[in-house]
Length: 400
Ligand code: FAD
Ligand code: SF4
Image 1 (spheres, protein in one colour):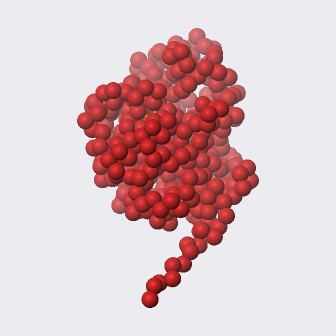
Image 2 (spheres, helix red, strand yellow):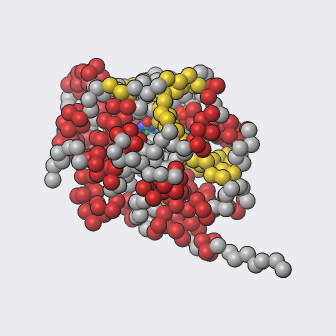
Image 3 (cartoon, protein in one colour):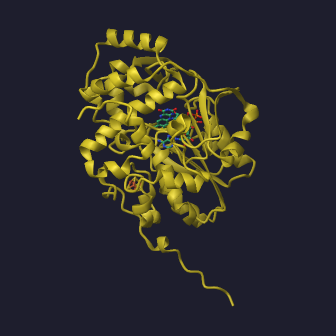
């Protein structure tokens, strides 16, 4: 007798219509889950409706972070951290292309059948277009950050329908939290997750405002990054780099451009990925790698012969700079450019470096975001802010 297979409940659900109001309302980060029938799970899965990082850490890594260990508190569960860069960087990647290289190896070695990543549309270099890449060329076409909210999970329905069993997903924290929450429903034998840190993301319109307010030539910017030298580096089409000091940014104008989801996010370091590749805990020009579990180690090992590596280091003291920046940001203070440049030079010389720079960035964003949630969604504050973030924010004096 053959067993009758029941259709999973979620397959009977219907994706929400494009542009319709999402269950997380203004806090929606457009992660893509609601564009699929997995919207069935949205009340449990959405990072902005049901913050559950601790439970999902245990599900994914076999334990949650140890709040008494300073590195765990800040960077999440991990086996090792290091600085690395590709011996031969990938032209046009955000940094040296470690993310794209790992994805290409996983596909060409047959470890996975597909890779969820995000290309851009033909018309607009910054408009995200999530895809399931099945060739290295398709992965490479997704290299470089799309610094906009991106519905990476919108392709999930396609995966279950395709019968794919081994998958790599590349994504940022909010996407990965929702992904982990529905992981068991995807019908996969093995899911690999390669994460990047993420902060201060914007809608496409917000990005335009940022470029126009901050860069001298907004239309030629191909990528940008908030660098460890306390400057935003804009790379232009002709290869030139324009540097603008953080302290000279027009905070009053720019305060409104960040997406409300990103102003209420406390998963900067992508706690639920198997492997995280960023830059902020590494020396300038290097990438920062956090191996969270055995799966992450397996992924990194695939490219170890393509990398130069060095141990992470930490230098300086971040707290005074963070404490000073809290009221300045809150009041929207913008320094004159000469003063901003001078301050940038001084801070670069004496300021936090390596892991301490990463902590500086986490502290600055968590304090800002804590105030945002407290003022705009007070009813969510207690449950939405994870315990580790409460401890981090608790080190500082905050305005009301
Ligand atoms: P590449 O080989 O160029 O590959 C980039 C990958 O990122 C591609 O596979 C693509 O699919 C994926 N991707 C691009 N845009 C998005 C998106 N919007 N959502 C999901 N996936 C995307 N690192 C830090 O250390 N500190 C930060 O503050 C920080 N902020 C970031 C903010 C954003 C919005 C993003 C997308 C990333 C951020 N990162 C940050 C990560 C960092 O900028 C690099 O992406 C990372 O170091 C990988 O570089 P790479 O050269 O190896 O990537
Ligand atoms: Fe849906 Fe994702 Fe928006 Fe939450 S963040 S409402 S899961 S699309």
